[in-house]
Image 1: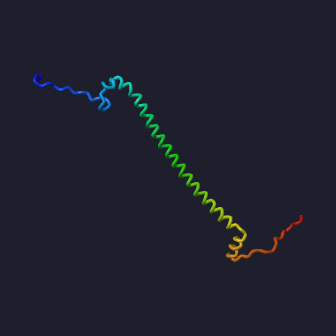
Image 2 (image 1 turned 60 degrees about the horizontal axis):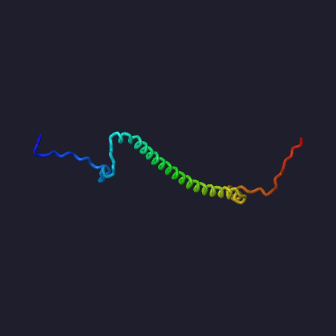
Image 3 (image 1 turned 180 degrees about the vertical axis):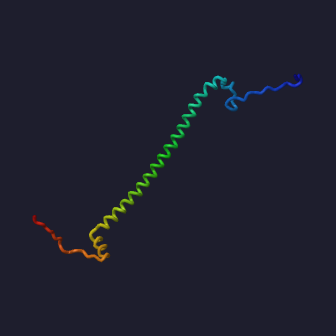
Length: 117
């Protein structure tokens, strides 16, 4: 062994960065770290569940917004189609269409045929 030069021992790095454990009266033991692992894993799982729930809720809100916009557009289309249908089925419009085909409207009243038994 070298008697002229003293060997340097490695100092442990202080816990929590620049704060030393002695100042805060913290003593970390290996068995304490092992005891804390289940709690740490539990909190980690809760964090993952919380994040996934937030993403799920955001997707549902976006889907609801998309569907409500689609319903508004379909409501407008329905109103337009209904108006067109009502206009096309009016008597004057039917007369005009029949006239284009070369047919004429019968102005005589309808005759009823009765059969006697």
